[in-house]
View 1 (cartoon, rainbow, N blue to C red):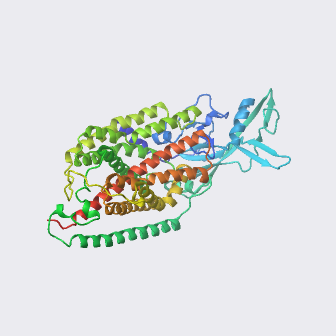
View 2 (cartoon, helix red, strand yellow):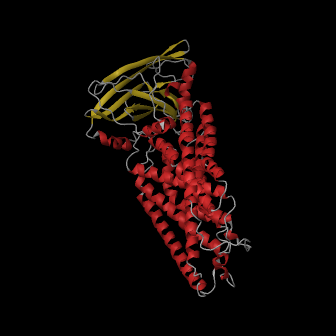
View 3 (spheres, rainbow, N blue to C red):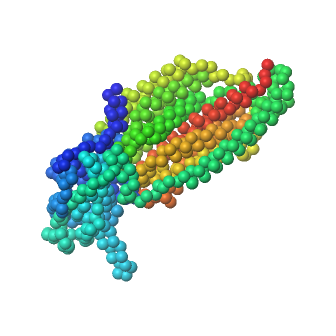
Length: 594
């Protein structure tokens, strides 16, 4: 309960503070990193910059730690509504090695992130100028003066940013050998004086709406725009597709029912005399599949992620995630993943009992580890790379123990409880026709009814329905955008589930029409293959739509892209299976049988 209470409290952080004139407004330094690698971040004090004698770190929420934040108090002294003009921050004597460190950081386009009253402030560490071809000029400069512009309304801070508009950068030559402006030379070192100014501007925006001001600010290039036209285009295509599938299936099924129900005499066992198609396999279509425990685990974890995704989107629509709550979505995902573990246990063990599964304890263990084991392995590799590089994305030991405790003390017990409840409340399978002991021989199938073809069709169509929105999601997760179009996201999510269910039903019907009753795993794999298309798209995005590079960023991107593909495979596989099962029960129940 203590772990769960901490996780829930970590979700709600980031409320605006109130100040009186002259009150101290703490400015925290946070992290630095290459501009094109958003997840490759390092502590700000790893650079040779002004720092206090003893560094005091801010207490962070779980989401902030997962987001790579490492906030620490700075030497900037800012008082509420008090102007500051070119105040000296510190004087630094840089060795030749430290100058080279700064040059390398500037050449890699390092930016910094400060935090003032939960408002992120971004700026570049230095300046690069490339000019001429012959002779070629390559100049690297360090910003040694920062202008802070802070907006306020009443007793609240509304917005803050940093500017170097009227400031000239101090050149950093190769080595430490020349003095320019405020940079002094001495014994192979440079003496640099850092200064800052603070300007206060009154704003009419109330503090309750200050997130809008940060959302409209554009330190990073804006790539997310209102994309209604693209969404409407996808929606029209999806409606046409669904209408086509539903109309065709209904017409075909109507003809099938009219043909199969001409003779009303005889029982269910006589329906296979002199006929073909899906009716002839009525004694085999409900034959339980191999690897029952694994199938039920997939269905259970898929149901869990479906619940989790729906809850995240609903919470976002209710305004629980704003730009001032650092890592709130991360915290929510951890909490909900732990709490929804009971869903996976219940669904998996309940269906496992219905299909005559005997090893229900093993089924619960498999369900609890189906996603958590790949997650732990991927995180171990990625975290090791971050730890080796010194990145702030490497989780500290206390956070690792907290997450482990959340799974051991909350997630796994809830999976067990859900499994026990599901086992005890499981009813019969409710098959409309009985299954014979001897399986029917399956005739040879044409190439277009093979598993690979069905996976290609069943994965591509749902992927095409979300391909437009997928770009904006990637630009948010692997970029620096703030996603706010949660209403559109909900519509696209509903479209994805609808297309997946309809395509699965259509492919299952075509499979049964060929007298192939092995639909159980086929229904999972057909639409679940959307995860493969999403991973292929992630490779395309990495190569053609981003400027990410390096081992640190690449390991994080591809590691978690694989996990994302697995999540979509489990979630859509579960949806498509239940849709196919409901469809099969409907058509066989609709046959006239004595």
